[in-house]
Length: 102
Figure 1 (spheres, helix red, strand yellow):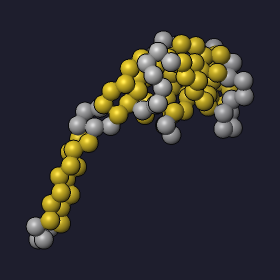
Figure 2 (figure 1 turned 135 degrees about the vertical axis):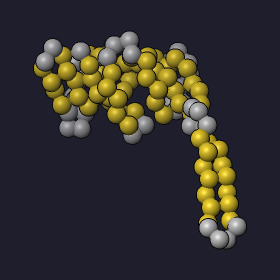
Figure 3 (figure 1 turned 120 degrees about the vertical axis):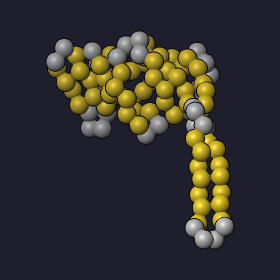
């Protein structure tokens, strides 16, 4: 059984006991979170929602918070001696999928 869930404007294909990294959530470590289920598949029977599947629940637990790898943002204008260098680390939350129910 798998489901397609939505969090932070992005979609993730998940099964039970998967660990996924999503956009940062304001929940504490150990909290339980319910995710919107967009599609659910169980032994070949597929149910797609419009936009979410009514009655379907995907429960996840917050495992950790962190920051991703640093990326360098470098902007410049040629022939003008204008340069700007920035670094960025995107915060994320790791979720462990506990259950998917129809």
